[in-house]
Length: 399
Image (cartoon, rainbow, N blue to C red):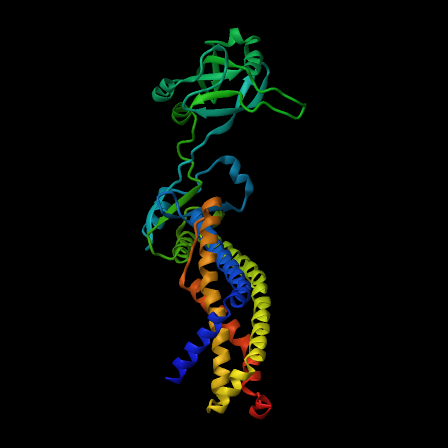
């Protein structure tokens, strides 16, 4: 009962001096609001970053296993580092949903073209429909893409190198990797500004044509594992590495490596979390300053209410009850400021998040942080004023 009376008296004292109480709370509101906003945005950005690293567009977690040969010259033979037997080995591991050779979606590649007496590397642009401004002929069309026609469009520089003029090149042949293609159009090439510059593109070809006639059919340089929901990626990748080291077809010629985005995301998440905590700690300096303001207000309140303290002591109030009253006043002041600061921080976080397109993550820890810090500040910075009020001598007060 006495505790409820003390609490009620404390709240009345805070509300009685509304303007002064609000000005004292202002530092708490700003400090708590800043910490809440920073932590919410930081945690949201951390989760967005980790999700972008570990999840595919379909929400799947994928791990890529590659092979590093001991002899680097082995790359020149273009071997298939992984065979179907390797795929079957890792496919049967617990936690693996699917295992396959990754499909490469190329947009450009380089090929050798015989230009007069010289063989040159030229950039091959894969497209579904060309959009170049043509000098002669036409662009690669969607019909060419649909039918996988063996047609190409080239720039005027290559056309002149092959057939002297753009007009002569039209409807002539172009040999690429042993396959003969028909030149259906010539477009203006990219200007060369210096001796070190090169045109951005030379040859345009339908994607389907490239995949049918030029792409390597069995380039099994890695294996992509799709993991089941809820499994620990580290555990699954360890099993995959162990079984490939033991039974892999290339294990005697090098070592297997894993590109595990889950492991990388753990490190990045830890770094982002530390940065968020550091920035929050810097913002928390304002809370210390606000705490000093609370202590100053409490000392002023004790000085102004000397008569009230004397009357309460004369009526039988103990030193502990006097001390508890002023402690509750300090805690009430900062707790109200903390709640307002939490609401302010949430509004600030969602406002910033909507502007910069970052998701906001608000969890129980953030709520407890706002309430806990504000209450702790009120308790710590009210102790000395409360003790000063409790230790006032009744005889000195009556004098």
